[in-house]
Length: 99
Image (tube, rainbow, N blue to C red; front, side):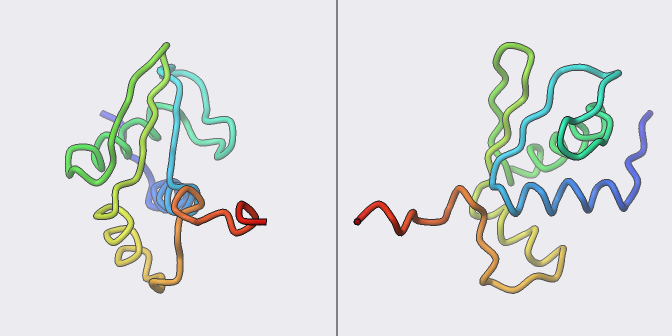
C-alpha cells in the first residue's frame, strides 16, 4: 500500500487546478517529469479524483491523461481555500484570438 504525503497531494492538486489537465506515465518506478513525485503516487491521487467523478481519464499508449471537470474545479478551490477567480489554463479564453 502506498500512502501519499499531504504535501505531495497538495502539489498535485495545485498543478491540476492551475493547468486543468494532468498526465502520468504508467511506470511505478519513475517520477513525474514536472513535479518530481513518484508516478505511482500521482496515479493514486488521480484515481481517487476519478472515482469521485471530478476528472475524466483517458488511457493511451501507456500514459494516463486526466481532464478536470467543472465539479472538480469547484472541489479543488474549496479544498485549497482559493477564490473563484482562479481558473485552469485550459478553461481560459485566448484573448488574442480576435485580433
